[in-house]
Image 1 (cartoon, rainbow, N blue to C red):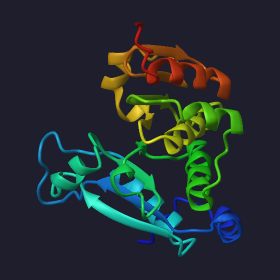
Image 2: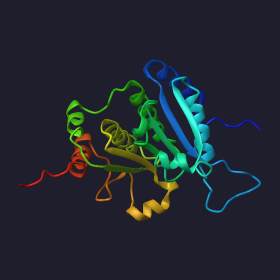
Image 3: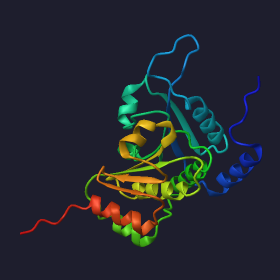
Image 4: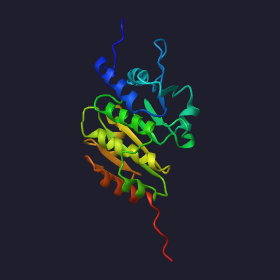
Length: 236
């Protein structure tokens, strides 16, 4: 039986042209998944969309030699998962090959299908070209962040307003090593939706303290990141 492609042939041709034109340097893509066995299923280790996510990422990586895809079994290699600060699967970590200890700052949790594929593609282009989509002023302000900031953006593949906010959050993580950003496909992680009270998407949580629903502009997201990430000056 021939396996159906996750990316239509017409889209593959377009993406191949896009990557040939826009990718300048290599990009490291690490997929954390779980290899299931038809003979043995371990309770609690099911991952409904892991096979589809692995297929999608393999197809995407095949479109450019600059995309270096590594696949890691979350349960067989827990040390690597811990090293990348990956807590659930499927997870996709994006970084420049020379990112070193900062390689875990940009993550997708869940399958980046539907509208989310465009956010993934834009992230790949941004990291490869080393050119930020953020304004010069935003990049300047983000250099002031001097304490840890964790951005979580909850999304679904069917909402067209999610990719832009996902891309903004990831771009801010690329600007400062104190910032990490997770984009979470909420339908795959319903417990998180309950924990954070997510009723619509996109929904953003920053440092567990700041929460807001709906799309956000670059200045709006920046303002909250700065509130969370700048240590107040000590009063004499």
